[in-house]
Length: 306
Image (cartoon, rainbow, N blue to C red; front, side, top):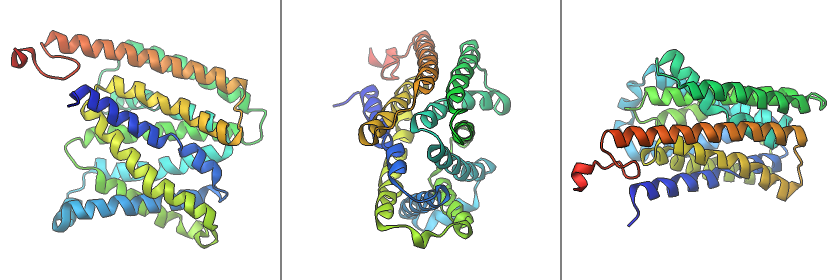
């Protein structure tokens, strides 16, 4: 029988592993960025919406009628975030995009500080400065490549949007966000439909898109939303960094894509900073839980165990 902590590790790890080929799949698709985004959002939206229909049955429309402002914001962020992610990954290296996306927890903390009035530890402010240093090194290497610097900037925008989405999810913590994510995918596809030619998508591309939108993304997101229920946020953040490492490795092994020295050095600064920040956060979490007489590994109070 797995402990609560072990269950959290296993679920989160499986989610990260499921998501790590995302960059490689995008690279294998020859379609334009907006066409990829259209199919990605449409297929994901269909799968998640079907699960929502099965879950709620006759109560789905009542749930949709009670949508909060945060849930509408989640829908918008889903569309914008995916659009920026695909644009970035098709205009710069996969490594650069994933290094930019790895800064999402930093932006989530800043947004929570601004709008949810949550306290941001001093270590996180220091981490923001170091992350900016790493990003400047990455973009310096992209300036020499036509359009690559713009891909980096859009990747950073994707991280900011995703951080906003995470903050909105926290604000709607008492709501089931599955319908919002499903509708976000479908409405994004409807918005992009006049701008793309989905009928011109090749069979090979459509096969990869089906794997991406109907299998990889729904499975990965389900696992990664479930993992934080069993683990403290700093531990989840640490494990999420694994995707930043694995994603470029899969692309390098399959396609031989070399991100370059600036990307590797800047990315190392970003990842190391986020790792230290998460480790310090984890230590603070354990100290806090021990102070109130709880086991940081299982979340069970000492009195109950004794």
